[in-house]
Each structure stands twice: as C-alpha cells, then as structure tokens.
View 1: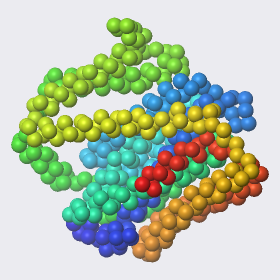
View 2 (view 1 turned 180 degrees about the vertical axis):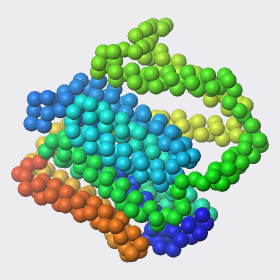
View 3 (view 1 turned 90 degrees about the vertical axis):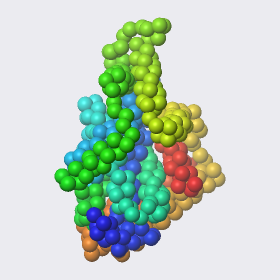
View 4 (view 1 turned 45 degrees about the horizontal axis):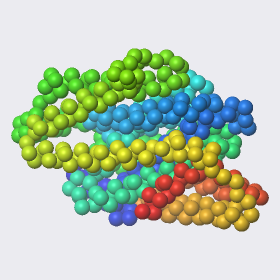
Amino acid sequence: MNTDIENLFKDRVLGHPAGLMILFFTEMWERFSFYGMRILLVLFLTAPLLSDNPGWEWPRENALALIGTYASLLYLTPIIGGHIADKITGYKGAVIIGCFIMTLGHASMALEMTWSFYLGLALLVVGTGFFKPNMTAIISEMYKGKESKKDGAYTIFYMGVNAGAFFGMMLCGYLAENYGWSWGFGLAGIFMFLGMMQFWLARSLFGKVGAKPERKEKQEAQAAATSSDEEKLNPFTLFDKVLIAVSAIGGLLYLFNDPVSKISNSNLLSFELLGLDGSNATVLTALILFLILIITRTFRYTTVIRDRIIAVAIFGIFTIFFFAAFEQSLGSMTLYARDYTNRSLVGSASMIFKVVDALLTTVPLIVITWVLYLLFKKTYSRIPMSNLALALAFVGIWSLVIWRLVDKFSQVGNEVEASWFAILNSFFIITL
C-alpha cells in the first residue's frame, strides 16, 4: 500500500498527486449532474401543464414534500454505501457502482413518465449512497503518512464540487427551461456517464488505493477495532438497540408518509396523539427516543470521550440549521425566484447582465481547463482513454457554454432563468 501511495505522488499537479485531479473531475461531473437535476425538480413538478414547457402542475406543498424526502434519503444511504465499500466492494468499486446507478437514474428521469420519474429518484438515492462517502475515503487513503497535505487536497476536491454544481445548475437549467425538461435531465445523465468512464478508465492509476479489501486487511482492521473497544468498552445494550430500531422506523415512516399522504391521499399515520396528527406525533416520538439514546450512551463513556461527543453534538446542532437553510435553494428559494422576481431585463440592464454572466461562466471554466491541461501533461501516456473521456466532456461543456452565450447575446432583451439564481451559491463558496 505504501508503494502505491508513493507511486501516486510521483506525478504531481499543483503539488498534489495526479490521482487527486482524477477525483476532482469525477466529483465535478457527478455534482454537475446531481445539482443540474436537483434544481429542475421543483420547477418541473410545479410547472403548468398547459404551457410552452409543460410540467406536472403539482401543488407546491406536494412537490416540496417529495423533494424533502428525496433530500433526506440522500443523507441516509451513504451510511449503507460506506459500509458495503468497507466490507465488500472497496472504495473504487463503490464509486463506479454509484456512478452507473446514477447514470441510469438520470436516464429514467429524462423519459418524463410517472414510473420512470420515481424510479429515477430511487436510483439516484441508491447511487449517491455508493458514491458520496467513498470519494473522500479514497482521498483519505491516498494521503496516509502525508497528513500535512490532506487539508489542501480536500480544498481542491471541494472546489471541484462547487464548480460542478455551478455549471450543472446553469447549463441543465438553461436547457430545461428554454427547450424542455428532458433536455435538462438528459444533459445531467450524459455528464454523469462521462464522469464514470473517466474514473473507470483511470482506476489503474491508484494501484491498490481504494481497492477491494483483502481478507488479511479485514482481519487486521477487526483486530484493531477489538483492541480499541477493550480500552473503552461501551457495548450496545438491548435498550439501546430498541431505541435505535424504533427511532429509525419512526423517522422513515414520517419521511415516506409525508409525500404519500399529500400526493396520493393515502395517510399511513392517520391517527391523533395528544392533539398532534399522526405524522408529527411519530417524528417527535422518534426524535425524543433518539435523544434519549444519545444522552444515555454519552454518559456511559469516559470523561474524555464524553467531552468529545458533546463538542461534536454542538457542531451538529449548527450543522442542522445550516443545511435547513441551504436546502431551501432546492425548493422555496427557486420558487421565489420564478414566481416573485422580475426576471425580465431590457436596455443597459440586459447588456450588463449578459457581460457579467459571460465572465462568471468563462473565467472559472478557463481556470479549470488549465488544470485539465496540467493533468494531461502528467498522465497522457498512463491513462490515455481516461483523458479522452475527460477531453470529450470538456469539448461538450465548452460547446454548451459558447452556444448559450451566443444565444443570450443575440436576444434583444433578456429573461433570466429561475435556475440561474441558484448558481450564485456555488460561485460565492468558490470565491470564499
């Protein structure tokens, strides 16, 4: 393993191994597809049925309920995907599986049929579970023994996350709102496929880093875990297991019942408890049981471990509020931009917007293309087919960007797409 890590660091781009840039671009295309599709969900579901670009004309509360459940499950499945990668597939295998499943999910959504839409969402949830936790796990394994460089590696990696989100929301949103929803969903799938091919064709570059765990490694990891457990044993009691099961079931019931009860009028929790309807009573009960579990287990640890858990819990509380605000861009903020914002620009305002939009689009893409050139210089002979897939992706994205800008500048006025407002989030994160 150490030999593989040293080999990775022989070919460097921006002071980091070329493999990090492979992960950068893989994550960039995955985020392109993920955020490109995500920004379209609420717009597609609530768009009028009788219009130039017909959607499903759902009530807002129905659309937001479905999107809320979808977003929640995206944070749940990585726990399962990470466990499968640790025990069975390895990190690289899990990433490829996740990319393939997500590609199928985007393709299903592009059909715009009821069954394919729900199937697509399910596939995206499962695929994200395989993909999301294992990309960062590969980075962690790559930098074993080189911890001083790890912070810089994650900074570069998350630049790829935000760059992909930026271009995905802009281009998928532009195609979907102006030419049809299938074009937006389909574009997300195309770049997910190219990202998968680029990573799969470059897998040899990583050697055994992120490979399927061997039996000896599993035994060593288990022995290390056992040794650690003996030092500070805090086994799960029967009471703990009951709390875990009941709180998990209650949370999942709420997640699935919320959209089902609104969309199909089939309430799985049609009862009242202490003046609360079934859904609210169930989720509050699950939350209380979960807090009891956390508190009782925390006080069974040693003082040092307990203090660490309390510190993590404090950060966790702030994280909850952050993501509660962040996820508004998925629904309510996008609807506000579409329905309550004057998006029509004329005269000098239109020209100023076009120039600013062109700069926001081309300058980051030029910088990323330069990074691509540096990667090609280091790896053109080792992973030529992966570089070819990456080159095709960049030819595609440059073509779309130029075509979009020409189309914008050829218009007398300008109507800003509702999805455009969401790209500012990614842009400001990159700037910071």
